[in-house]
Amino acid sequence: MKRECGTLKNSLIKDRIVLGVNNTKTRDRLLRVQGLTLKKVLDVLRSAEETERQLKELDNESVVFESYLELERRRPSHFSGKHLRTVRKNELQSRCSIAGTVEPDMA
Image (cartoon, rainbow, N blue to C red; front, side, top):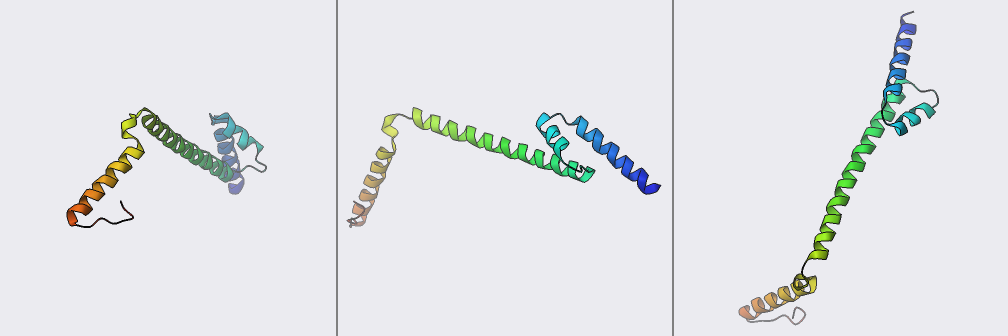
């Protein structure tokens, strides 16, 4: 009798959780599971929460990357990568000339 009461209680909790899920995709996923138990419900919900968290994280990374690309696009041409490489190369040459030697493959 005690075990039947626990099983009924778990079944009622499971049903209440499934019907209370706001996300329709998650609720549909739960309703399609064969032999749904309270443990399976909790596993599916944890998985859905983790998936949602990862999607938000990826979305934030995407926004940051798109912002970076927008900044790169708006950057004035005199700050282009080629210009920076030339400045660094000239800076390296002047440092080498101060030391008295210029490496042939660096010039």
